[in-house]
Amino acid sequence: MVDDSDDVMLISSDGIIIRMAAKDINEYSRVTQGVRVMRVAEGERVISLTRMEAELDGEEETDAPDAPPAGDAE
Image (cartoon, rainbow, N blue to C red):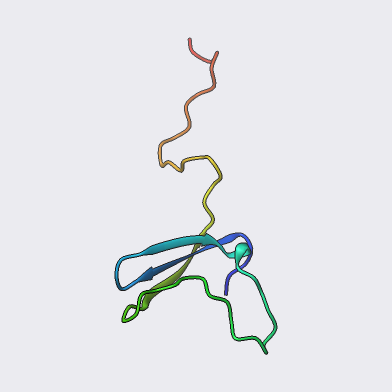
């Protein structure tokens, strides 16, 4: 299960990786045949699918502590 705040990552057996926002995948009723999110070459297959936290738009994630605000130096 995913929600609109998640990303989905798929990896194919030939090394292709696709990451997309779950909210960008269309939802249809049960009577449809599904939604294609990755095309693979003949003989290849999707080998992994995982749910991830969504990427931040235009911001890099870091483990470093925040720098002190300007003007607080002694």
